[in-house]
Image 1 (tube, rainbow, N blue to C red):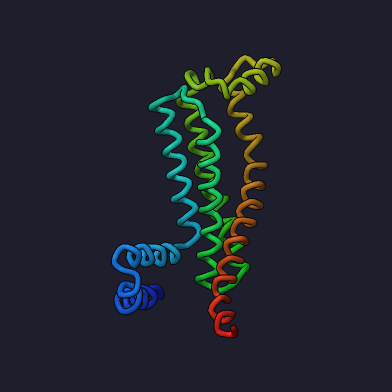
Image 2: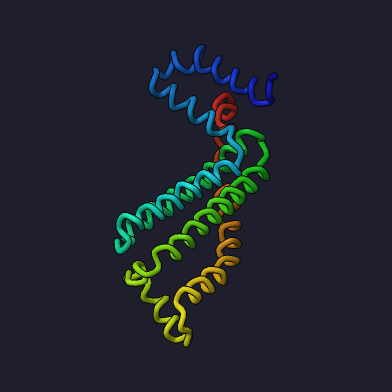
Length: 201
């Protein structure tokens, strides 16, 4: 039984074999083929995958070195990687459907799902490793707020803060994801117009 994607993949294989590999060589052609296949994945798949990878890495790194500090270069690299993935999702969506609206929606979907899964993993991290990670220097501000709150239960306070910050985090991820998706979609549209511009000149 042929699915809707089977002819597309068949076309990619044919283009890879007949055109791309002879011109680009084996390594660059393999990279091209991998990018083309990746662009066929749905936004929700990328969102879940990204969230699982980030959340799993966060849990694993805490288990290995619970008191290790998050250095500014590491945080910056993580942020750039996440934003690049959101931009890529918009690029792939516009390239696949040739609708700019799809790029914005794809960016928002990937951002919300990846942020949501990562947030869930981060919540689990706090609950499992709370007794240890509360001694990290980047928890100083939270501990100050805890002492000022008059609460006697740090775990309950952490849970309350996590849930209070969740709505704002979701709204921010929707907006940021839509913007990143739009940037990716705009770049896809720009690339598609380049051959026609070259032919005119």
